[in-house]
Amino acid sequence: MWLLLSVCVFCLLGCSEGQDRATLWRGNDHSGRCQYTFTVPSPSETSCSPTVSGGPEMEGLKARLSLLEVLVARLTGGEIGGPGAGSQSQAGLQEALTQAMGERILLQGEKEHLERDVEGLQRRMEEMRRETERLQSRPCYPQHPLLPPSIPLQDSGLRPAGGAGVLSHLVSRPGRQWDTGSLRDPAWQYGGNPVLQELKAEVTEIPAPSPEGPEDSTGCGELISIGEPVSHRKADSIAGKYGVWMQDPEAVAPYGGKMVWRIDTVGSEVRQLFGYEDMDQLSKGFPSKVLLLPEPVESTGATLYRGSLYYQRRRSRTLLRYDLVSESIASRRDLPHAGFHGQFPYSWGGYTDVDLGVDEQGLWAVYSTNKAKGAIVVSQLDPHSLAVKRSWETSIRKTSVANAFVICGRLYTVASYTAPNTTINFMFDTATGQGKEVALPFRNKYRYNSMVDYNHAQRKLFAWDNFHIVSYDVRLGRQ
Image (cartoon, rainbow, N blue to C red; front, top):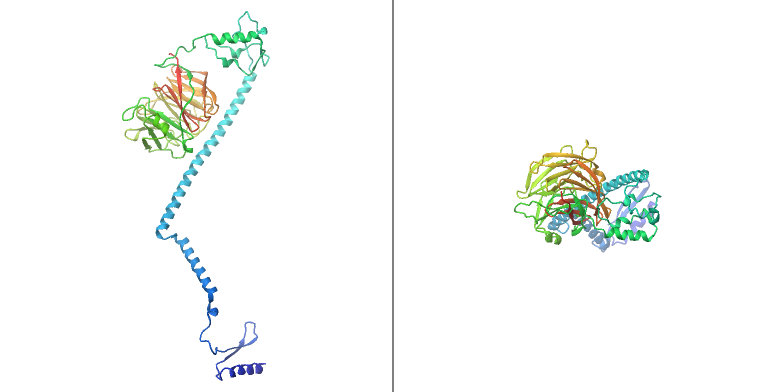
């Protein structure tokens, strides 16, 4: 075998111009077998062709490898488009991140509000269930005859749906103005007797003075009625779903009584106070002043009085007086024992534990304490030091009402924040220390009223109803 291979080799060499340029090598391979190799230089080529050394495939591979190296360098070094473009890209990414974080905070605040809304609705449903059971178990007794003695009840065509013998809940006190709508109670069935129709006509035509007395357009008195809501502006973003808007009833220079102030209260760091020259500029959305409060605001309980903004500091029972002229905190004080940040809010939630307001008699705080067991406490405050001058504890729970306001030293509560046609359902008089149930119609036009405050200079209620800034005229009786 070896001999034959040698002969072949020498034959090949003999064919190569007679020169011995071949090289023979003998050795074992990796498996231990004997292996012969030899090399013969090319008789005509001085170097290998491009196909052997690389060729187009190798050049293409090198190009792709170079491209990958460039991409890796750009990704790791952040230099897409050159050094200037890298810094611009980083700034753009940072701005997008900041915006996303802001939106996340707003959505988180909205989620918390909605969760509290659900809890408030559940509590309200439970209270309504208990009230329904109480009313069902209470017997109906006659109070005053609705019909003249000459008209027997059995001939009038009136029949109670529940089988009772009288119309006690349709009876009015002597002298009260009849409301034709009150005669249309779905709990009663009308027999269609002509006598009833005649009687209704007579009732609606009888004039009668209000039991609260004539309206007083200049001084104080008990609340008689509330007008229809008037819309002034709708908020532009989610931050304005809840808020507070104010006019100073006793304004001081440099801001006059026409100046309107607004705070959007959705968010975790509410600090912006917007000022408008008048109601017209508010409706157009053109603020003339924007102030950044030094400490964040908690919910919708702020108020304005004699050149100062009064508000509750976020996550605390601390009250702050912010002077609009010096643009600084003028005084601060903790409201003693007041619940805060969701302990005793209104039924709609929103951390409305402390609600500040102003009336003809000064500055008030509406809140609750553990000692009061959730019942509303109303306190009159010193407008300079924020010290409590006097306090009254009422008999109505704060979480059972949607909002509250003070007029002429009397506290009034709103029954619902979502029902389009609700009532002012309770009044507490600080002059006598007595409270009573009332039923004054009140409209939530946009069905989510998160703020109701009284302005005695305008003789109006200011409210924030589901993104909408609205106001109501009020009528007061004589003292």
